Picture 1 (cartoon, rainbow, N blue to C red):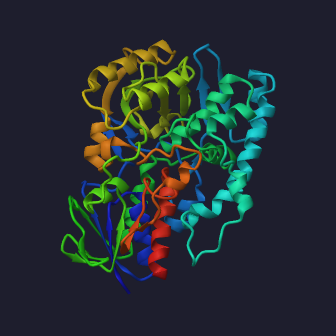
Picture 2 (tube, rainbow, N blue to C red):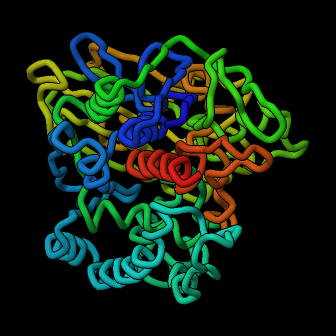
Picture 3 (cartoon, rainbow, N blue to C red):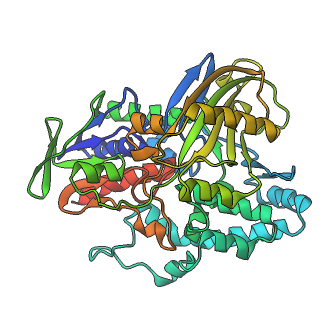
Length: 466
């Protein structure tokens, strides 16, 4: 069989390696860092353990299919999210629909009906888009792939933004904010994001939000172990600065001969490496400032996942995407996985992962000052760790770029803005190089652990039929 080189030991690259090895190919993975995972990292501070990347798992069947009996245990998180608003109100949303509807109706009359209507629209979107999550993107069309059903195209409401969808399905402005936030799952903002991004939020409510005892990073460890068990080689501390080429084919990476190359890194970084970077690059997706706080507990009203909304959501997006500065009043996401798995913190303690969206590529930012401001905002919004922090760390956009190669610290690559924004995401095939395949969160089908894993599987299938 052929020799494949995978660049990047993120989840997409590792998933591609597993599938290639299972098909009988030889595989070498080059990873610039000293551990697998890419943006999905793990850090321990003073006895507290933190997932530094994704803190939410959806679509668990993707990993059960990939890992079989080696898949770590996954447990449901309930509620999926607790939403808190600037007016002091809050609501819990569950993946159990009757429970969610009851919670919404007691919070705002008619909100349950509106949420059910929204989920109904999303269910149709999911039905239409699911085949493209595991296969090649529908655009540009390929002669060797059956054309998509045009009715599927209409079901994803290509004429609408996510903001348009939220306003057409929800009457309460707070429920609209919940729906609008799903744009950030792809690093976008709702006023310019396609309505199809609602599917990103739909899956956690239709199929549940999940956690892995010991941390989400256990998924990474399991996939990396599977690669090595199957005979693959993972070389850490091995950055890739060039792909050796002969005509329209790659022939090697880091001195290792290759019949195929899977690029599991930032798509923009690949363009730059190939000398193809555009003079005016596309708008980049969100980055984020992360605080890792070991907190003496317990904290009243804490949930596994909590969203603290600002008073003016649009002002946040203006700051980040228009003015290219940290938002003056950002949404704060707080994940405390020790609520579900107490082993991730010392007895009586809590592991707070706090995220504030920021622009990617921002320069001249005093991130230490921003960290203090985020702590002040937490206190002002009713989740005050002041005086209880016993361990502390952070991850800035600059850290993210340095540690993972995400250009500018953009978590999802280019921002999928525009009504057809999801179709503009780079596909798996690289123009002009017949045997280089993209995978990872900046390529089709997008970011988030399950989609990234699916991108790796797609890369392996393309190689298997190439």
